Length: 436
Ligand SMILES: *Cc1c(COP(=O)(O)O)cnc(C)c1O
Image (cartoon, rainbow, N blue to C red; front, side, top):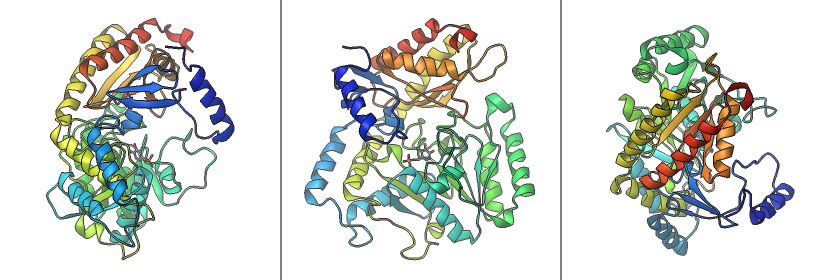
């Protein structure tokens, strides 16, 4: 309807600049007024095809009617008691659902929190309480959040860490598996990581290894087959808790309920958030009952953790994942996106890699001459797509990756329209030096 941002959005952005801290930036320069059906509508009446889902959150579709009903019903009953003061059944039912849908049929327990970072913090607390050890291993390109401990676990300096230290101690980073860049088999990459852990940290002091089974902000890196399995068995043999951070990859996003399933691994603890509750803030740690029970009474919790309205939304969302064929939809999205972008890659050497699982797909842009990351091209494409009405996000340690995270419920026609815009934008983007 207008150029982006239109006048009403611009007015809101001007007020944002005056009222909101500058550190809270915005990728899409609009004021959103409505969203649903794979579309976000702004204050000027512009419609955007949503290939971001608010960072993999509204996977079931924005304002899904079942979630909206569940929220309204629960909100009319009560909005808060504090689960640590007066427990209620919605929280318990979410824990039961998580214990049921996460990988493995061993005895499990869950605890609920407000954000992904908070879930990760608590997973580390629980692992330390259980093992009575301190050190934690995270991986290159990892993203685990913005709190102090999770900044320490996160790999990328700008914008996540720069200027915000000192960071939590006893966190160590090792190389993971990035097949496009390291060329290693899963077994080789695991041997490299394990050697680094044994020689430079030592299993005797190591409480936990935390990893995203498919990395999110770091670039949608899918590890080589066998990598995760080897790390899990090493952890078992060394009394180290294996934590899968599935905050971004969980809940049908990758064409399985959890990405761990693609690799046949059963994590000791699994952290979830983002897609869990149809957009309401909720997060969880789920895992082996004996590990989850290691923290003393009162050691876990928080004022809002497992808020009843968020829990009601989660129960509705989990029902939608299980009954509306969204795992299958994610696989169809993978097929469609892969076919389209592999075809473009065959003609355009600036696409170094097309990868991902399900509706968590990435296109990595490189300088064809050197294979070095081309962040300028990724950023140019994302910006141009937004101006053309398609929400496209970038990611990667080097910022040279565009990531596609459409709602799993998006119609194939809308998805194809969005992909067409990206592909046309790439075709128009000037090659090499001209792009920088
Ligand atoms: C987004 C994310 C987090 C942090 O979640 P917040 O809700 O933003 O705190 C942690 N881990 C992964 C893998 C994520 O993608």
